[in-house]
Length: 401
Ligand SMILES: *Cc1c(COP(=O)(O)O)cnc(C)c1O
Image (cartoon, rainbow, N blue to C red; front, side):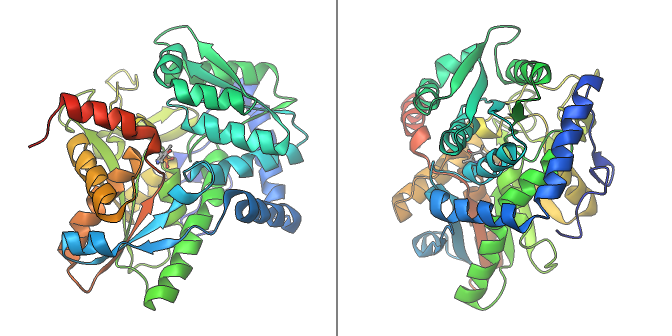
């Protein structure tokens, strides 16, 4: 727990809370009670740690990216290699935690929505291992676009439900998954994919991800004998960022940066997802937070080359940390992201996820600013294997100078 945590009602300052329709109040309260008990139970925590070590492959290394450091010419850049986890990203950390809690609650099935399919695959993986059923709701458009992830989920034994109403995309998938859950919550656990949604999910998912920051802090102290000057992570819903930041929140000397997708530019309506930069206070998916929205409160259309980042909201703790000035939120465009993707691939032999490439963009900027005596830790939230076909096609259509 840090000093920036939520109060008993799940509020981080004015953000967070539990804004759900009446029929979801009891299911959410049940999750909150179960989580409060579990996080105080050494047996639960010990079992979770065992899964992280033996199943996910933790700890992930903190890699001194010396080639990248030389290439940039400035502060030493370290990469927290969440891409090396089983299934290739940080998402397995909280999916294992959610599955373990579901099991403890006596649930038989995990249900969730997924956009590009990354959360669905990680949750289906955890469900397979823990012997739980899994049902993933996915917009019909995304089912067609993200075919390999659909196949993966099915191989893992999950049922993929294509959502055919409305825009047939992520927003409708959320509604569809929640409707199904509300009818059947006695046996079902809702597995949210980031530090978003009604209380307790923002705090709970952060706790499951906090292993990233705890490890990174210990690792940098042992490698460098001091804390970094800055820590950087990309922000979609904000789970990998909260994981890394939670290790350093109480170290005031460590500057924290969240990097949002500027897409084609933050001044182009509908073509970015820079929630912290352009959003306003609102309510979305059961939480009070910063939202990209129009005057009537409808969430805006969003875009990023990294599908894991195109969300018009953000975890409430991020909104809170921004209001306190503890974390600085910056942006990176699609083009900057692609440059970082290519640079890291070529100089280090590490193909980063397009999401994580946003963090690399800002890590390189900071390294230049801080100069040779500085140290920057960037979260490499996932591997880029899922993105290589798309990037190759994109670069063929948009040749770079
Ligand atoms: C899903 C995803 C993200 C974005 O989610 P956060 O909750 O903001 O961390 C970032 N990186 C990768 C690799 C992802 O799969």
